[in-house]
Figure 1 (cartoon, rainbow, N blue to C red):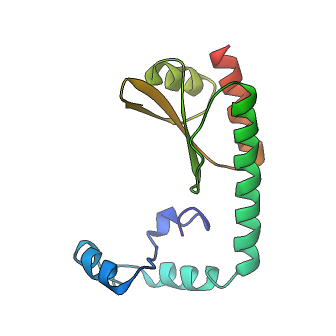
Figure 2 (cartoon, one colour):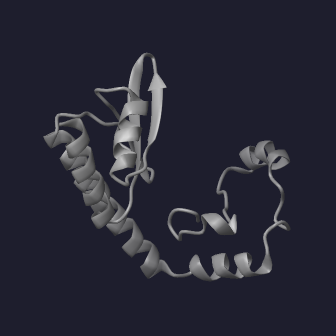
Figure 3 (cartoon, rainbow, N blue to C red):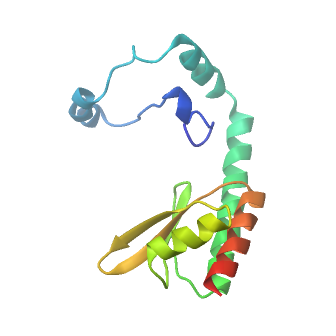
Length: 141
């Protein structure tokens, strides 16, 4: 709900799982009564808008493919993703990349694993991804 509908601020979500899995995670949830009525109504209405879902998923796939193509062109590998972000190894320290991108008005996340620095880019609109790729090209050149 937070990514497909931009409902992160509403704190609304749902889970689909086998009953035995739901039973395991249930103690860690706050239950269904902590969601405000406006949030619940917005979520219940939005989930019925199949056309919006399809459009959002198509636009997200288009933006992600744009990023994949850019990274390949720049000779960066990436981890294929079924999520709304892409993770790829970078050729500088993560803190340095963040500082340089931030100076360009672009925010990303950094990770370090097994002595490798990684960049995590959230998938946005195609225009937002173009802003990222322009800034990334500038700071790694």
